[in-house]
Image (tube, rainbow, N blue to C red; front, side, top):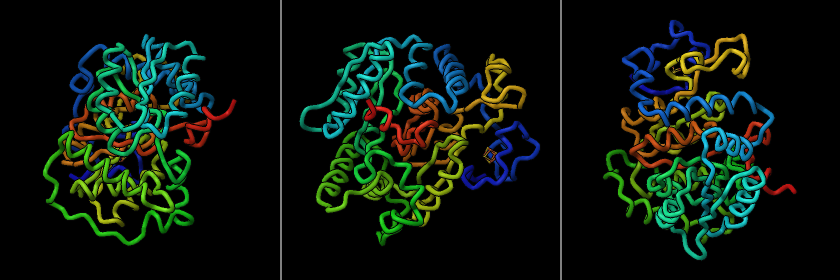
Length: 354
Ligand code: SF4
């Protein structure tokens, strides 16, 4: 059974129509139960509160506000904010915004060189409850996610070409970004990937960053991700996406496949579990009175890992759902887009305005 939710035409999981799923739907085979996937009180609370924040702030709260609301509900009072050195301004702005929303914030921005493992250790010593990515290089985010002791969520995704608005590459893929995304490159060679180590991630991230620094026009995030995958020998990528990003997931899948990568993908509604199952009342749904399923972030990562993906791409998950995915992964994750329903996913805009 292939795992290709990005190519699904029905999205029957979204409304709980298990009877109407396509033949290659993962729900047609043995599917992990909620008890198996969320086996701690913390994991279940995160699932519950992420869903409440999603519904209450739907289309009204920016990403940074959603993160603050989730932190308060989860009793994550002390937050860490991390970035690579060239994103120090965005990290400071993120910290300022979160402090305004009543949170205690520690910024772990390195002065000169990228140091994601050192930043994760520093925040562990600072006993942060929740760590916020505010702009890290491709691969350095993977290392930070691996080493963070606290749950991680994504606020700003660094994109040198698009002023940290990486979703714009997907929306302009047939226009201004076409050459950047579909330009001639060597295809990846399946079977060359030898497994991950921190050293490989760090060396590859450095090579990607050095290559970008030497270019007159900087690469966009999606280009850097493909460069990172190629240099590390990855040929099979997994996309973990929000159902609200189904069009973007299909576009990202097309870009990666055109560049020679094998792509598997998993939609957040996979499993088709009604929200009432985790105690969410009808009036607490995004749309009361309609069938509404939970986001199932650990099922997404679990299905894709079973599929053998070598690198996981996080596309538009809600605040908290991304944290659950990141915490459950054994392969590295790279952030592609952080969702912001108010700002068309340009999360950083909320930080720049006064
Ligand atoms: S899980 Fe949902 S999106 Fe994926 S194939 Fe099944 S119905 Fe389609």
